[in-house]
Length: 218
Image (cartoon, rainbow, N blue to C red):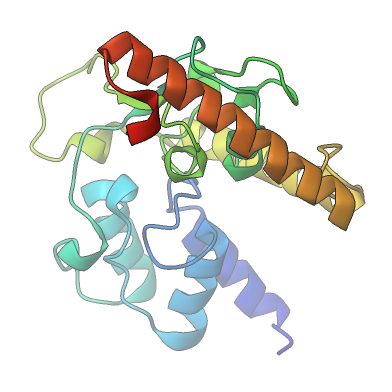
């Protein structure tokens, strides 16, 4: 369905109220998809945990919807987080790189990965992607006045930065393959085999460290 210029501009305005973490907690794949749903289908504006009270108020004022409390089905208000990789356990599978919507993971196939803390939006999408569970959540030190709405610390500057990184990643992926060995069927099968073997080695090493029988699994 074609969207008029006026509609597109309104979607842009709604999208600008969102924190651009691209976390999918709202039920949509991107912040802009949620903004489109709000404009086109009157989807409630209280489904964005990272936006906190700030986004709830701004979206309600912009759309004319009532300012409701955050819908608990989509999460709770919580302090913003970042993630860190246990580099000693990383197998270099690149799945976290593919999952990160803002290119905050640095690394390559069969090489150790690390998180750029300053670029991490706290979306947590890399956690379920990691086959060896070597990614953990950290809570950065909270600065500024105490607040009963922790996410209210999100700033428009941060949101614009995350949106820029997300847009740059999207353009790069649209322009061509990511360069990871998963573009062809044989390469994908080979990548899966390598990951399976690497996971088995990591689990075996952990079991030995715990004094467990490697044949019993986790």
